[in-house]
Length: 331
Ligand code: ACO
Image 1 (spheres, rainbow, N blue to C red):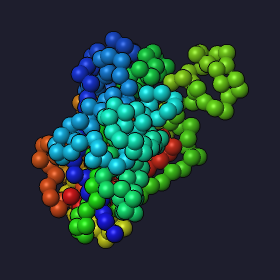
Image 2 (cartoon, rainbow, N blue to C red):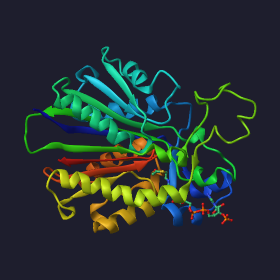
Image 3 (cartoon, rainbow, N blue to C red):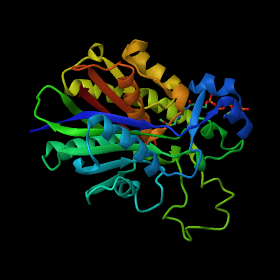
């Protein structure tokens, strides 16, 4: 059975940088408050109208170029986003069109902060089954235009940024390399702890009087509840990935966690007894880019020569749903 291997990566961050100082002009907050609680110093926001698919297009061009591939060399797209260009159709088809690809399948994945690992797992299964040879896996988010810029929304608004990251998966017959395993979980009991309710299909009428006033058009987060679950579910997911492959935490060469919050990442590293140099963090510069954070981080870690052949790379995520997930990769 073939395995899948990540043969190329790419990222795109829109050019507008919003520092914490500028954020403090948009909502009542301060650089100190944001940095102390999240580690974030700045984030990127789109500088003109562009959707998740447009940013993914820019990141994909980089990944294709690096791999020496053309759009027609890709057999399938898996696109993870919670901020699609339109409610429907999904951003995957828009990316297929932007790239001028043949009429390959395009699937959107809606698993928020865990979305990229879910998408990676889907791509991996298609390759393992022999159905496809190369799959483009995308995480892309435009948060900036959907945040609540006032005191009510500030707890959420200061945390998020825009960006896109992609990887290209390719089938390999090498037995020891590639994606070793992926692990996916959810617990919908906590769905409303981190959510964006409206416009939602369960409301009659869907666009009711008061929809603008009741806050449901903006993300809602119970920050403390999210934090509490994140610091246990991240380590559990990492341990599951290690156990499945007969590995131990000290064998990890690089942990790439979803960039939720620097405090969450530090707590996870501490619980897993991982030194800082084995845990990648870039939330300081990008904020939380949700489904895009892992592929952006992976791309930067590779660029900074922090991942080498045969390294054990572990990806882990936790977020809205709640959902959590992990992947073990022999690079
Ligand atoms: N700037 C200034 N003050 C603020 C802000 C802000 N942006 N937001 C909230 N406050 C105020 C509150 O109003 C409150 O004021 P009060 O004491 O007068 O009532 C005070 O700061 C403390 O608010 P809390 O909500 O209690 O802040 P807390 O210390 O819990 O930190 C935070 C909030 C940072 C969100 C924290 O709960 C957290 O890190 N949770 C994890 C959530 C997370 O990281 N989510 C990422 C997205 S989900 C994911 O990717 C997994």
